[in-house]
Amino acid sequence: MRTGFHISLLFLSLLMFAGPVNGQAGGDNTFEFLRLPWSARASALGGTVVSLSEDEPSLVFCNPALSHNRLQGLLSLGYTSYLGGTGFGSAAYTFGNNQKNMTAGINWLNYGSFIESDNPGNITGSFRAAEYAINLVYSRTFDTIFSVGAAVKPILSQLESYTSFGMAIDLGAAVSTRDSLLTAGLTIRNIGLQLTTYAGGKREKLPFEIQAGVSKMLAHAPLRFTLTLRNLQKFDLTHSYDTASTGDGNGSTKAGEGFVENLLRHSLFGAEFMPHRNFWIGAGYNYQRRSELKIETGGAAAGFSWGFGANISGFRVVFSRSTYHLAGGASSFSLAFNPGSVYRRITD
Image (cartoon, helix red, strand yellow):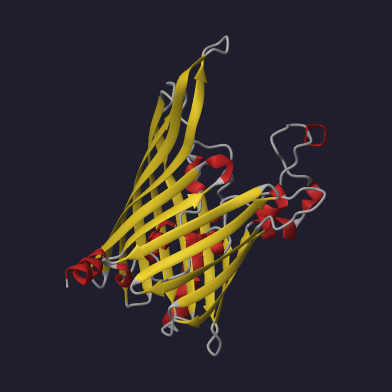
């Protein structure tokens, strides 16, 4: 009964908070790299997961409340080969005690090298561009089934000679049943502001977002299903780029798009098959990604993702592949291990 009350209270709080908010869903903010899928396991399940309490340190980037005692002493390293020759990665380390946990991490996006030229077009050299976010995460568990967490994220963006600083905060909560078959999560991401702008202009908004999700493990089968809802601060996620029909040219939705279409655009679907405690394979579906990036002649596998993970001699290895467009997708890889255990194994 207490678990059911916690789950109901969690989502009631979400509805009360999200109801009056009409935030932007993307493309209108600075530091948009904060939306990237930093966890390879979450990428396999559609892009992000806020309700998955597993031994994957990178899941803390999805929801700070997912930092728990089983992660203590684990170091996670991740990298994603992204679109257009770009790449992004992360690192995280968790420490603490049974009820209180701290995670220190970093996210970075490398845009690569660009040719620099003057106004007439003469090549004068090259320059690089990159963005970084430091993550300082604190979480606490109550009664073994309910946890809350917060992450403070200093942000640095350097694009050629232009630099911008920012500060963001993530808040999260997670609750599970005693048997851990059902887990629910809620996170409010990127609350903050741009402290300094690139060229001294007006400060821009951060990509604020509210997410919630539920993961359900079957009692008598090695299957788990996950539903994650994104951008709950803004219901209308449809777009119309026909300025003649909308009159404003800002991507406003047409009246006939409908409730179901919008609901699906918020939804990420994931499924996992876990025949052994040291191995899993999963797949995901991102409806909005497919709707926006498929082409008229065929959507191919746009919006679909898959991945697998294994625990091999104390090393947790995860690989995932996400298809964004007919032209390509992103491959993610992560490795988590206990540095102390590895050192002792080498020296023994």
